[in-house]
Length: 324
Ligand SMILES: NC(=O)c1ccc[n+]([C@@H]2O[C@H](COP(=O)([O-])OP(=O)(O)OC[C@H]3O[C@@H](n4cnc5c(N)ncnc54)[C@H](O)[C@@H]3O)[C@@H](O)[C@H]2O)c1
Figure: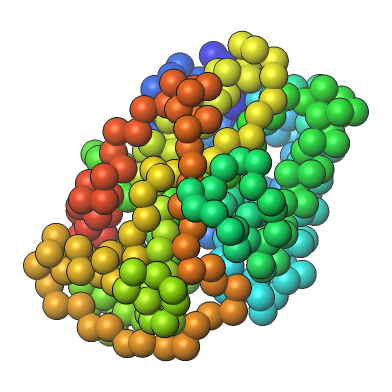
């Protein structure tokens, strides 16, 4: 069975990718330090507990499993925290990716699917955002992703690694069978925070800024279901293996929802009251971010099946209720 090393395989998107890899006939080998992941989310292959910054641990895993490719999800993910603790982001996301690339080079592993982010673009003039848009991140998290992309490009030049750099917008929702779902600690993403407020796990939901130049003054984001994302990862992996060509892709739906719209929809779906408090804008937040994913649909024949906002909220709601 072809083995794929999945860094961050115990995390939210990584665990959904493992499920999809397994469905496609691969064996996902998760490598995760459990700083933000969960042992119980690793269900479709072995879990090796380790840090991508530790090359000895990586060497052992590469020696034992001889992976055909790497899917690299491991990293720190909070934009807000990256403003306060930038060195944590450069160390874990940039140095960690470099450490992984060096081990891939040593073991001649030729394929990588990398979790990048819409955050690499920063504040763009136009929405939806194409892959060719200017990249000017507004926070250390976005920079850590962009610098990692550049390193992957260089390693591709010097040792022939073929890559798929996938820039996703807002991953959301949960596996329809509820095998896995979103569980970050601390949680910083809007949908789980809103649903936790509905379950009274949080007192209220904070809106950071209601005076942006958007339809209702709150920020607009493009929400893509995590299972659709997972599918795009496997399609990308298959494509780089088959065609031996690298590419960058944006992954989103092309539709945006404001913070207020998400809260209103969540109230309807949960049938619960959700208290809202307005706070000042947060540093680094961008008013509107919507992906142009035509390239992904064209080159991967990627079909978005679960990303209508109702399905996203319903699957997430079912998952959060199951965690009580
Ligand atoms: N969630 C989103 O909306 C979103 C959007 C764009 C990009 N991304 C990127 O997708 C990837 C996965 O995001 P997620 O939401 O699943 O986050 P997550 O926190 O659930 O998963 C990341 C996993 O990486 C592990 N990890 C962190 N540092 C590690 C290290 N040094 N060594 C080994 N394991 C380590 C954590 O324990 C965790 O299990 C991240 O790289 C993130 O930047 C996420």
